Structure formats: C-alpha cells, structure tokens
Length: 509
Figure 1 (spheres, rainbow, N blue to C red):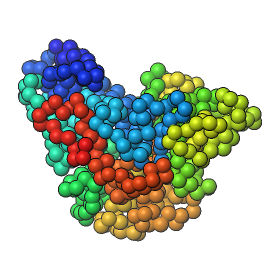
Figure 2 (figure 1 turned 60 degrees about the vertical axis):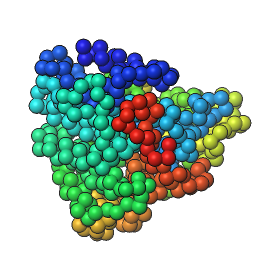
Figure 3 (figure 1 turned 90 degrees about the vertical axis):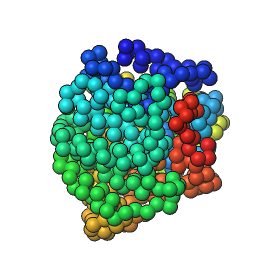
Figure 4 (figure 1 turned 135 degrees about the vertical axis):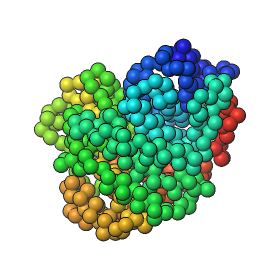
C-alpha cells in the first residue's frame, strides 16, 4: 500500500501543476511521514536508498542548484535567441523576479520534501538502528535546505492520520528541530569513510551543525532580510563543531576534489556518490555552458558574469586548471573558460555553428542575439569530465568540503568567536597557499571572507546563502541594476502547497 500511495502522490503532484483540483494525496509526498501500522510492509532499506539517491537532485543544473547559484552574483541563464527562454524561468532567478508559479521553485520544494518523506518512512517504521540514524541525518540535511530556501517547513507528528494536513514549523522552530536532531544523533554516526564520503558520518553532521549555528542569526531573525545579530555563543558553536571534524584536511591540489576519482580526496566530507551508469546528472557541470562544438559537447546555456570572474587573481589556481591529458582530450583547460576555444589537442581553433571563431566574451546581456549569440559569456567546468564515461561520469558530487568548514570557522572568529582575526588569518593563509597565492593575499576581515568564499566555493551551492548572511543578496550588481525587494531573501511557497490550511505564503508574494 505504501508504494501505491507514493505513486498516487507523485501523480497528483504532476497534475496539480496544471490546475487539476486535489485532495490531501498530494500532501503525502510534500510533507512528512505516514506509518504503516507494524511497519512490516515497508521496505525501509529501499526507502533509505531512495533518500540517498535523492541527493543526486543537487547534481542537476535545475532545482536546488539554480535556486542557490543563479540567484547570486555569478551564474546567469541568458536567453539565446530562441533557446533557453522557458518562459523566462532562468532569467527570473538572476534578476530576482520569480513568483510562486516558477517551476524550478516548485520542483525544488517537491524534491526536498519527497526525500524528507522517504527518510520518515525509515525512521518511523521497523528499521535497524544504523538505518534510522542515517535517515535522521539525511532528513536534517534536506530540512536544512527547506529552511534556507523557504523559511517555514511542513512536518507531521508520528502517528498522525494521512488525511490530516501537515503542520508547519516557523523558520526558528525548524532550525531548532534540525539542530536538536543532529546533536542527538552525532555520537551514533560512523566516522567518515576515507574513500567514500557518501555515507552519513560524524564529520558531515559537525559541518552541518556549524552551518546551522553560523546562519542561526539569519534563520531566527524577525525580519528575514535583516539586519542580523550574531551571538558569540553561536559563533563558538561553529568553531567547536569545525574543530571536532577529525577525518579531513585540505587536499594537496584544489582540483583533486572534482576529478573523476575524487572519492579519494580527504577534503570531501559528504558527497553524492556516482558509479558507472548512475552519474548522469553531474555532467551538467560541464555541459550546461559549453558550446555544441566543444569536446565534450554542451548545451550552450549558462554563463558567468565578468564582474564575478574578474575577482580572481590571474595566478589563482581555482580559476582554471590544465594538464597534458586535459588538453589532449578536450583542447582547453577546465574551470572558467574565456577567449578562443580549441579542438582536442589544443591547436586547432573551434568555430561556432555559423563559422565564426568560438571566442567566449565577457560581454553578456540577459537576452542575447546577433553575432555573439553562441559566444556571449564566460563558461565554466567545475568538474573534470570523466573521459572514459562522458555520459555516465563517476565523479562524486561534492556536498560538503573541509575548506568550507575552515572558512566558516574564520568567519565565526571574526563575528565574535574565540580567536578573532588571528584565527581567521591562519585559515585564509592556508587556503590562499593551496590556491597558489601568497600567504596574506586575502585580508582577515569579513569582506575578505566573503570574497574568499566566492572564489573557493564557486558553484558548489552556497552562494545565495552566503550573500544573504553578509547582507549582499539584495544589492544591485552586473545584469541586476537595481536593489531587489526584500521578499526575495526567501522563495515563495509553491502555489499548489497552499491548499493546506496550515501553510501561509511568505511575505510579499
């Protein structure tokens, strides 16, 4: 019966989007859990596997990645003639004009809460202790993202009837719940596997707790748009959780974290695992912007604005990466791609489909046309293409990295935590040196931390979160010439979720 109910729920999610009237069947996949009596009919192992596989939704170019990165200051999805318009849904993110009907907002909401549902089926039915602890961690991770994006979060109490509407936590209540869950289970989680960070582990829980305490001032604020007051006790919680991470350090080389064999990187704390045949989504990280004529071929879509690219020092190793094999296979370095592109081997210049030089420009508009239709905008490859498996790459997708933890510690120290600027300087120097920059290149200030996070963690799914915490998100920037309405610090609750009488639309929508 449980599988039948889920199928019904997913079916109704699809039909609601097209205006079909609904019952509470749709809520079953959008809120919390439903028990099945003695639990004998629930394959909890399968639902735990589904909850892990749900992390692959972060690998795609849409949903959570778009909400987090395209709304920020780097990534844009311009319309290119008749391509990449999709009712302006991509452009809406960068210029902050989305509404409750934006399909990517709805899809992110449904993806996150579907996986909360899968976790609850493990937690509240007959499962092994290990399964339950893993599911509780995964549920905390999914709920963290719901709270970050939407503020409020739906939930069901154990044993509630499936006909009851789910209740809603406020942002403050949801934050408190996730913190309490992580602190309750952290001692029962296993140590991180040094060659497979895709299993819930203590280090991942410590990093997520650090993330929650660092953002607690934002999540608990009376006004979601700020100003925010950071409590010294919370900042010390950030520091203590980062210090408790035991299994990781910085990888010797930055780009080891994004190679096809990145599962061996000691820096990756939590990942979404890909094996041959399962990693199709991660190819978006090299196809979403690359031209059709490049190797591997791309979709000629997303780009980076010059303002963001120009923040990188020319010597910064994080801007671009090359090797003899990369040039042999693909013709161009990975990372940010600007200028003339080449065929494999790096000698023969490429052309666009009209025979013009395939020369990526810094000049970019939200609606492109004419001679630069196919070349406007800097393109990116954060992950090294898996040459042997381009369509089903084995690169694991990075969800948490130790460098992020270190930068959170540095920020917390500057926001009133123990150690202050001295701690921040030590961390920033270590990260700068790994990036092939001189120690001291990044000042030990909050502005320095903000800029460093943009360069170290580009397109890893944290930029919107960082910009809000630093109160930069609403400001004008390239391709967004005016300040945004404060309502845009939260995404709207999707229209179809508002059939629940306990749900309230976020202010301003």
